[in-house]
Amino acid sequence: MEYILEILGQIGIYIILAMSLNLMCGLTGLLQLGHAGFFAVGAYAAGLVTIYWFQPAWGYGNYAIGAAAAMAAASVCALVVGIPCLRLRGDYLAIATLGFGEIVRICLNNIEFPGCKLTYDEPFGGATGIELPFEAYYSQWWFIWIHVIVIYILLLNLKRSAIGRAFMAIREDEIAARTMGINPARCKIASFLFCAMFAGLAGALFAYNQISLSPNDFTLLRTIEVLLMVVLGGLGSFSGSALAAVILVALPELLRFAPSVGGIQVSEYRQLIFAALLILLIRIVPNGLLGVNEFHDLPRRAITWLRRR
Amino acid sequence: MVATSVTSRQTGPNSGMSFLLRTRGVIRRFGGVVAVDDVSIDVRCGEIAGLIGPNGAGKTTLFNLITGLDQPDHGTIEFDRRDITTTPAHRLVDLGIARTFQNIRLLDELSVADNVKVACHRSICYTTIHALLRLPRFFREERRIAARCREFLDLFDLGPVCDDTAGSLAYGQRRKLEIARALATGARLLLLDEPAAGMNPQETRDLMDMIRRINSEFKISILLIEHDMKLVMCICDHLFVMDHGKLIAGGTPDDVRQNPKVIEAYLGRRSTSNCP
Ligand SMILES: Nc1ncnc2c1ncn2[C@@H]1O[C@H](COP(=O)(O)OP(=O)(O)OP(=O)(O)O)[C@@H](O)[C@H]1O
Ligand SMILES: [Mg+2]
Image (cartoon, rainbow over the protein chains, first blue to last red):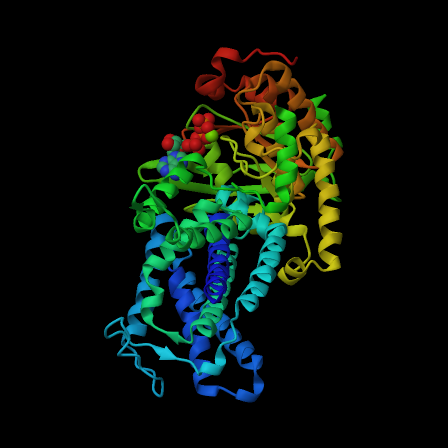
């Protein structure tokens, strides 16, 4: 049971990461590969604030301060990275943000935060990390899921507003968007800010869930995992991202418990099966599981689809 | 009929001289090519002006300069007595300039209604907070915008398809949607880049009526690029002719039709076409 709730918490954090990345990649059409960097900045900002100024009496107040610091730090990073990169499109923006993600990880690897417990003797072998007070375990699975629901609603509201339409207009055709009065620079920065801010918040939740943080939690692989969720769920569909996050986190775990078939231990091949299933899924639904639709669109879509038949 | 309507449609006090758009000595070079070479044109308030010329004459490039998508190397552009030479495209929408594109640029994945709603972007007054938290003002504004979109869509008979994606529309409907979208920005000057391209004669006639209606009913001045001489000669109050980047003639359709330079450059073959 503990184990399942732990996985549930992980899923929640991944959902927030995937939805926030989808805002930028799916809705605004800007490929961003530094998501793990913003996640890391959020996690470390929250972690350090709590390590240095922990007040046992404040309870969740510590969380609130840490989360605010995480979002602020990630937003500042987004501004610093985003403003010079504004003119960059496609591959160049991807490379610039990729660089940011790696720089963050390498910096964290080499900075010794004074007064923080260094986890040299962790199995990571040499990596430095920080450890929060044990009482700071605020991110129970339900706490994470409250965030998931609130962020999901906020992002849906954003998508179905003038701001979301402007983001999508930029994705579809930036020149047409400009002639309709949309300021692309402003929209891109706004999109980047929202993306980084929610990634930072996910980082804070992660910090209060893991208690000990290491730079190895924030490798490029994590960005790729999240990007995979975004693509698998459907670019521009927040529901899709959530669904894909559930599948991509739960499936490998479920495969652990796969029964042995004809003497072959299926669970030993779970990585292989997982990869094969992914390829299969992308072949079947190249536009992602939900395309551009949200959960609440599905009944209406189903009706129009049936009518057309 | 065309000639008299020019003066009768004038608005403002000293209507004789009220120019809406004025370019002076505009030059734009691309490497060795001078795409727009010292072009000065005036579009008066309330008129339908035409911009014609052979392929590669620099018409679209001039449109790009006027709409702020590109900046001239030399010269100035004024709109409503304001210098807009370096004003970015999205700000020109506030002043009242809207355009369509030669190769239609719709937001294909968005619904037809959303395409028009995007064009209302500048007139929506709620903040991100209103949108995120769905405060009452959000709903009020969205309702207003939806009603406004509906009007423009109905004007172009696009009401029935308003929930389809723009990418799924037929060619003629795509052209219409692009014009509807440009109108929805609240434009005072509409620049149409070959609106009748690819349309059949019936569609072209409908389009001409529509352009006239936009001009007279909504009091919107129009500058249009068109290769269809019938259309141009019939609906334009004033014509500008470009060739190899240069403005080679300007005047009423009749003047232009008889201008030897124009006949040589462009009209020779079909100078006697009649209105339908
Ligand atoms: N971005 C650009 N870079 C380089 N050359 C360009 C660019 N845009 C236009 N040109 C050149 O400028 C000239 C004018 O092009 P433009 O598209 O304005 O012509 P046009 O009058 O609109 O022609 P058409 O009737 O075919 O649409 C052409 O020779 C074209 O090759
Ligand atoms: Mg052209």
